[in-house]
Image 1 (spheres, rainbow, N blue to C red):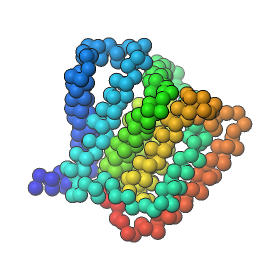
Image 2: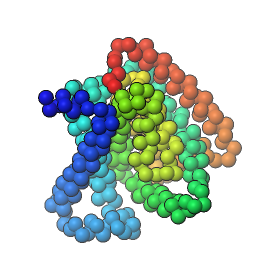
Image 3: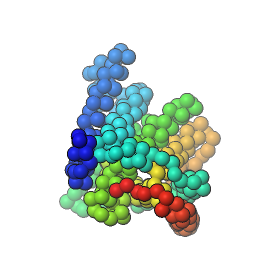
Length: 314
């Protein structure tokens, strides 16, 4: 009776209640995680506050920063997704689309697509980063630029590793956890609610992609991240399995982590963020678009063959 009451609510209520679950889960997990850290270390709560209020001390406490990042991902995305599925779904696996229903050729093409898309993603990120707000929003733009610089500084701290163990840990924190958590919450949960709310798959996918990009609080990376969100959303629509966008998301993040690691150990001398943004690379971007279209269409065609076998739950 209790669960039935929640399942019969409107999509708008489900979106709002899911947001509330995310906030409560984040607070509880973060509090318990910090409490556990204080118990297991000789650090006081005041010292932790000092560390996070001083950028100069972050570099010396990068493991704490990564630990907090893991807490945030678990508390804000992964745990809430399962709680929401409990309240609003009859079957957890079905609600979150956790069954892997796609064929290997689809998985292979999804992996290939993320490498092919790299020049296009970087090109769009370059365009986005050069956008300027109107003059009356100059002060806001300065604040956004500062926030972007701070986020980039923290990212550089994360990926600045020279050991293989550090690289593996980065894959876990930066690639595996976010791929699972963000796809569960934005695609398996909110995209479902938005589709049910708007009665339109494409609008639902778009809303989820916008929310996904906005949640990163990085305006100057909003455009490429939103387009990635659109792609991940359609991968779920076509494949009926959240593991497909999870794999795509993982490959996107893991590629960056791997390139930074290989660059740090002097194995490669290529800046991954410059691929597709250098002068005279317009043909590379156009080729990226063309090949990406072919691969995405092939994924759609392969998955369409099995479309009638699995029902998508709105």
